[in-house]
Image (cartoon, rainbow, N blue to C red; front, side, top):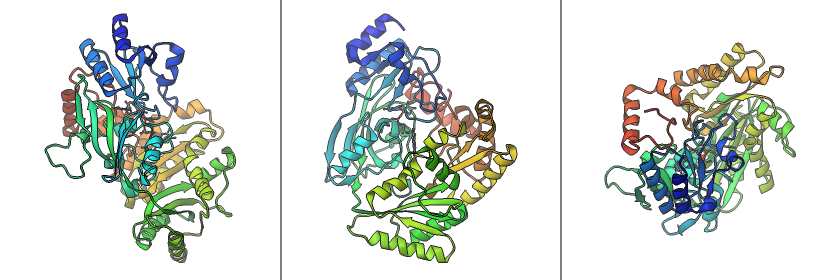
Length: 471
Ligand SMILES: Cc1cc2nc3c(=O)[nH]c(=O)nc-3n(C[C@H](O)[C@H](O)[C@H](O)COP(=O)(O)OP(=O)(O)OC[C@H]3O[C@@H](n4cnc5c(N)ncnc54)[C@H](O)[C@@H]3O)c2cc1C
């Protein structure tokens, strides 16, 4: 990278917003799981849309590769540059202003670098809800959420990130700005361009701003953990509670016994929610716009019916916010707890909910007969058909030997998901991790359409190359 290029970048964003020192760059170059390490010529942190546009124009003129980055919490290596050291990372964290809150329109306009937690807080300040919710919400940014079309724990009721956006501001690969910051719920004036950028993982444009949809803040919630004998019972319970509570379910998360044990072993203060162990659990949450305790009563009645139908063996409903937080802690600490149990091989699959039981039966059987002692820890968003089918290594096995089988186990698990009409990436995206595998699975027509989009919007191939689809 030429000194002249860097000098121009410094002129655009200011000296303090450009990092070239190896130690200071390190946190931006490694992704959280330690699966990808990249090299970069500089980390550039613009402070405005105009600065992003100027950087992109300069990059276009000088054929410089740009890797967009938000909170660096992505799980597929999309935000990590390659090993060439030729890219600049364009990190959006300085663009962290809430632009406006329109309480009548129920919308929040933000810079892309606003963290998800800050967007939630801004909505809450006006008794509104921005319902996207992820365990990484303190760090991940709206731009990253939209670029990955993040899912999380409330998709069942509110949809994916894609469903929560009314408008976008995009800086294109050549530096032009598209201002699509519209707050309209109805707008059929031609192609819906924002959809192209949502879920494009930084390969088609830089998201610099967004108009987000808000909802009334729930006034009451009922949160419970129920012990269920099988995943089939969990699916029947989902439909039972849904019917009994008039569609008030906002989360329905599956948890295996081994997950509870790992959390109780490794997370200080975490407690087993029920007195007797059960092979499976679900965390159920209902929300309502009304005050009062009626949701707890509704859930209790619904569980009584479920116990009669032998879908549930025991259940506990949170009696306070502290207890509710403790239930969510059990669910959300599972990935971290698994890290203390040696190597883990991850999957983020989805299948139609009607196939969840078959998927779990077949996948557990297949991995256990392939490697006796392997410990499946399948958990996640059962209400959306999305299971994080994570595998912990056999106790006595060497971690490296186990992790060397990552692709092998992906093939087994993804093969079963696909056979059951599922997807190999429910919510984390493609990035580098699944790019080649996706290319094997998509039809020629679909890949051709994706490549045509990429070539049209980024003709020089400078925006996050090597991610999602190779051109
Ligand atoms: C503990 C934990 C829990 C998680 N839980 C969930 C979950 O429940 N559901 C879920 O879907 N994900 C989950 N994730 C994954 C991750 O948090 C999400 O993918 C998140 O949306 C990424 O946001 P980020 O700002 O960190 O983006 P980054 O990791 O920085 O980037 C992710 C991708 O988006 C691109 N990008 C980032 N910002 C922009 C921008 N402004 N313009 C264009 N492209 C951009 C990057 O190039 C990259 O391809 C979890 C991660 C962790 C660590």
